Length: 127
Image 1 (spheres, rainbow, N blue to C red):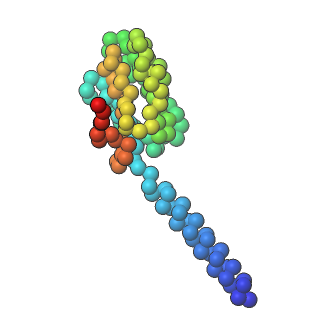
Image 2: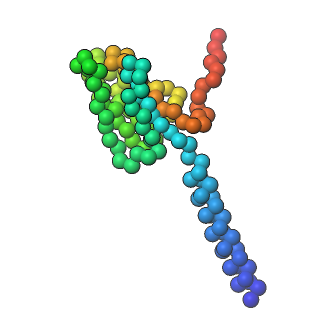
Image 3: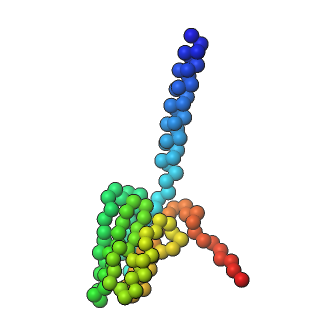
């Protein structure tokens, strides 16, 4: 009789522990937003945590230049552009705020911001 009681108590405690761990892990997700800046002005702000299905935004620079920004959950990239070097496309996806995507010919910057970003570089060392 005592063995059954201890098994039931252990099972209930295990279920409660799993539930607490699940809830705690969901609350630690930082808010991650992407900003698309053109000519120094923010033209689009996207909450990357709320993206369910990937989608594209086409941005025209007004002089015949374009960039296609591809948005996915927790990451963003420039998938197509008609700038001469296409370095913005070659950079690939970004997931944190360490390096923004920059397209100099079209004066476009795509960057990620988080509410508590541990990946921010606060010092540079060298010779």
